[in-house]
Image (cartoon, rainbow, N blue to C red; front, side, top):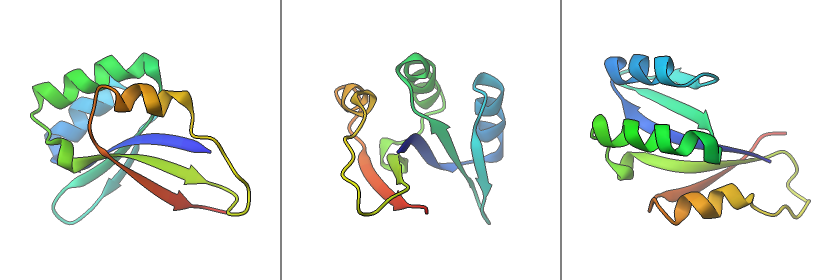
Length: 98
């Protein structure tokens, strides 16, 4: 299972600022904005939250994405997700990618 914190509606300047702050981002360019997925870890959480506050990103435009590789296997959600949800109230999304 892979876990990402996604920022779903960044403008180009916000996307470039985040890419300078953090490495290993997955950026998707859409018509009017960018979606950025950051691999979730406790070490990156503080920098990520500072970015969200400074750039005034609405938490409604963020989520935690769980990427599953097997639909039939029971997998526990990593503790990192629980730790993050104690501080940030955002939705969870699940995606199956074989």
